[in-house]
Image 1 (cartoon, rainbow, N blue to C red):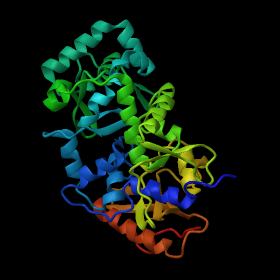
Image 2 (image 1 turned 90 degrees about the vertical axis):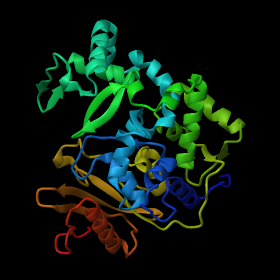
Image 3 (image 1 turned 60 degrees about the horizontal axis):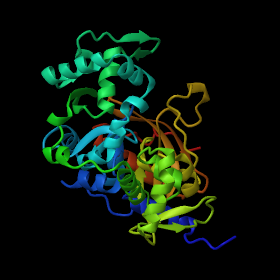
Image 4 (image 1 turned 120 degrees about the vertical axis):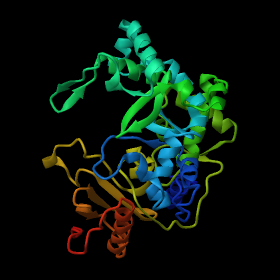
Length: 388
């Protein structure tokens, strides 16, 4: 076996440093900017059993930062963040909007089925919905004329008006002006994004995708092609030539990593710290956990979302957060914010094999920080489940 350019431990520390876990937590006025400088974007998800998903990456890296600062950056002028399909539904810096215009241009061919069908078969409906937004926006999808969502089992079906406004969102003609009780309020993109962003030239598709791969490489530190592609959900056909171009430019350095069964790429600016002393609870939609194969290669940790798994078949719980201590994932904890009682509920804790003796106390301290940040009472010694 050829000598590895990076040991498994070095690759792990590179990945953690790239994501902001190798530096002290600071929840100052520049915290949100530092977060996005590190991770590039954060995922949005509607599940609110603990906290909205897009707030949790900041807590993991910054500590008890001001969530209102994130809301202000995303919803009010001067607008610094916007919503779009980056890695799933995401919050991204407004400067990245030109890099995603190629995706917007493909919307009517690549959006999900209902949106494609409405765009193809009912172009007049798209024009009508766009005109409503122009005249009345910001407005919610349910406020569109004729909007009557239909219940189908436990879920709401999308009406054609909802599909139309989502097609316009995918196409970049409308965007989220702000949210009301997590409900997206749509407005014309030209009324939401800063003029300088709107006036920025549209890069060629290859150039935009190459820059997104570069940003993914910075955020990952070291990664294989699938992870570089997954970070911004790039087309499969695009990733290999863009990676090759970045290697040619010296931006990416091909490396082998101990224990990895595939080629890897190290960003030229990546740090290899001698040690990482992190302590963080990672939300299930955290950037570090996006690509499950990479998580397993880096940490020897198998992570699966069990939110949509029937309760009897769950292994660890409904809303499980891995616990990072030092440079290892050492435990997982199933959490719920009981807002009515004002308490952070810990349904279960599970230690990983080889978790150090200090894991339980470190986890307790982190739970206390999390509870305080959420305005909840922390679990007491008697209510915290014993680790198996």
